[in-house]
Length: 192
Image (tube, rainbow, N blue to C red):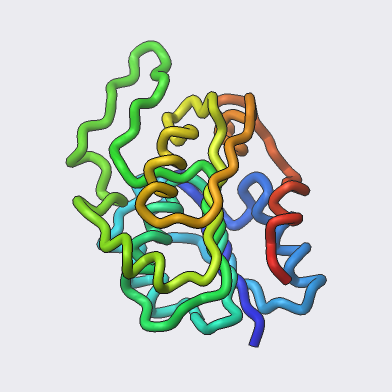
């Protein structure tokens, strides 16, 4: 069975940004698509979200997983915990370390212990073994710090394909007025 899992980022939902568009694209290609509302999206927490994904997700050699922002470290943890190699993983504006975001006035930098979606370390080899194909799409000016350096860090540890977009920000952000309702470039990367 061809299936796809699309995961939203922090404070998001299945209707955030380009997620509905990618869902429609995959459904038109005869994929069964699951776009869940993650538990406590305003404060992504690996201890809540990872068991939810592992319990409710379907994983097989034809599975495609796509994630945005805070969903990306969740997907890394998911890949570390599944027992099958999936077809493709695409991480958009992803990260695997504490971020150095450009802060608005009055905001405080998140401390490492305030980022419960991250693991302290990752089994990069296991992650690599559990996805046949992986793409990292990051921008060189991501305001949250999910930038090309974060993409490079994951790429250096896993391999795959790193794509650096120039001036694309977070590729979906209400706070930074990036509606990003469609993502045709992402559609071209999906291996149907």
